[in-house]
Length: 431
Image (cartoon, rainbow, N blue to C red):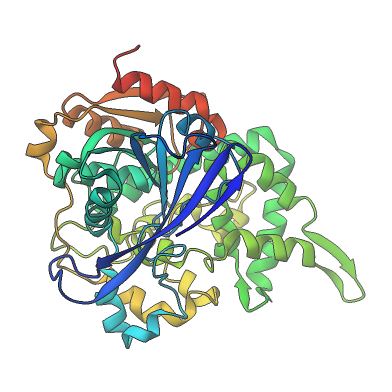
C-alpha cells in the first residue's frame, strides 16, 4: 500500500488477489486494484465503507483530484473505495497487448467470459471483509456499475448496507436485440435535438459524410469512415455532449494545394473521441453484458440497425434530409478501423457467437429485497432505456426512484454532491 495527500483528502492504493474463475477458487489468481479515499484528518476514524463501481463496461474508476465532484460529499461520512473492475485500469488490464498471453482468439474469448458483472460482484465480496471486517458496505454504481449493483442484490445482498444507482438500472430479461431496438429511437431523438440547437450542423455533417464515403482517411493507424464518423453520436448522451460535438465539427475542412481535405485537427479530434485504446473491454463485452441464455448476441446492434433505415448515411445523402449520428453501439467494423481492436476481431466474433451465458439476475430474490436501494433515472437517457429501468425498479422490493430531466446520463459527474445527497436521503427515508 502507498498513501498520498491531495487537498482535503488522503488516497491509499490497495491491491487484492482474487480468483480468475470464482468457480475454481484455488486456481489462477488475478490482481484487482482499488484506491481508498478518506477525508484529511479522518484517516484514523472508524468510518463506514462505500465502494464505487464505474460505468462501462471497460472503464477503470475515475481518477479524482482532491475532493472534486461527488467524492468530496462522499468522504464527509464514508471511507470510499474507487474500484478498478477486473480487466480495467490497474486491475489485470485486458487489451490487445495482454490478451495474447492467454493464447489464441478462442482462449481469449473464454478468458473474457469471466469479466462480466457476476465476477465483479464476487471480487467485491472477497475484498469487502478485508476492509470492513465483515460488515456490509454501501455500493454506488454509475451506469454499468448500476448493472453490477443489481447483480449484487441478486447474488450477495448480505454484503450490502445500501445501494445507490445513477443511470444504471438494467432490464432484467431483455435480450441485446430488445436493448438496441429501444436504443435507436432514443438516439434519433438526441440527434434531432442537436440539429434543432445547431441547424448549421446539418449541412456540415452532410458534407463530411459525403467526403468520407468517397475518401476514407487514416490517422495514426485509425481508419475514419462514414460509419465511424456517425458513431460520434455517442457524445450526445452527456450533458455538454451536443456542444462538444458542434465544436468538433466546426473546423472539419481545410484548403490545401491538393484541394479541400479534412483537417488534421478534425481527424485527431475524431480519433481521440472514437478510439477504444483506453477501454477495449467496452467494445469486446458491450453486448455480452446482456447475455443471459442460450441465444447469442450475434452483433445485435448491427443487425437491429437494419430495422432503422433512416440511419443509412448514403441513403440520407440521396435526399436533402439530415444524416443521423449513431452511438452506444458496437459493430463488426469497429474491429477493422481501430488499431486497438483490430487484433481482437476474431475474439470479438467468438464472444458474439457464444450461447452459454449464465443468468445474471434473480427476480425472486429481487422481489423479496430487504436492502435500501435508491436510483436516479434520467428521463430519456440515451444509454439506458427509461422504460426498461422503471420496469426493473418496480421489480426490486423497496427501491425508490428519482426520475429527473435535470441531468443527462453523466448526472453523477455533473450534479456531484446534489445527486449523491438526493440518493442518500432516499435510502434513509429523509424525503
